[in-house]
Image (spheres, rainbow, N blue to C red):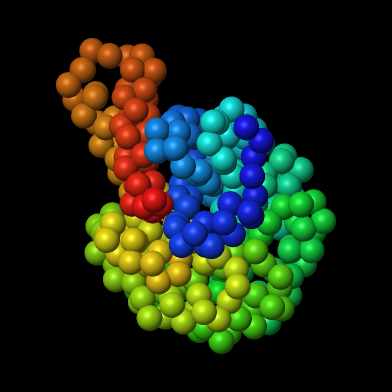
Length: 277
Ligand code: G3H
Ligand code: ZN
């Protein structure tokens, strides 16, 4: 099936449901994400972060593999570049055929974030690619979980109008890389931002948010739900269990296959939470 772009989030926002956006680390992740989405019968966003591209010593190897896996999916699929601060990586993703990119200017001051994001939007839109940007500080990428600067609803409306972004990542209580699901979302703020801006809203750091709070956040106005650390926990636990009970196994297809299957099952479950139709 051909890849899709921004229309997926626009339709989901209109329907009041969420879309799961899950991070690809290796090819087995991409396979598991598509398998889980197919089991759930719902769309999925496969996202590759700037850090994951660096891990693979460049975007093309993991990017091309993910694009091929996504194109073979039987459900609508987006391939998205996540948390790019390097604008040349965005150009590379567009050339490879990604349908969506995130420019992460969250650590820049407001004026510079607007100027750089607007320039990225122009280039991406010329190529038919949609753009997500971030306003406020989700935090946690440095390993600390101190609450960042939450997104201001009025500033969010001004930012979307000034940049032309297609989706906006907002800081509303979550934090990246949490291994416990204890974060509390600021639901009134989500509702205020959703009323102030017309584009779909994105929750980063969703691993730390309990299922019920994710559902409440979607009801309040979130659409794209980014999950990574939780999936890595599930994948790693399955791999450890397999190796602990099969101590003589040396074929990576056995233990990576077990981890991939377990991850696919969790993706199908999580998509049920995110898109409760
Ligand atoms: O951009 C990716 C996400 O925000 C994932 O965050 O690892 O805390 O789930 P997480
Ligand atoms: Zn993130």
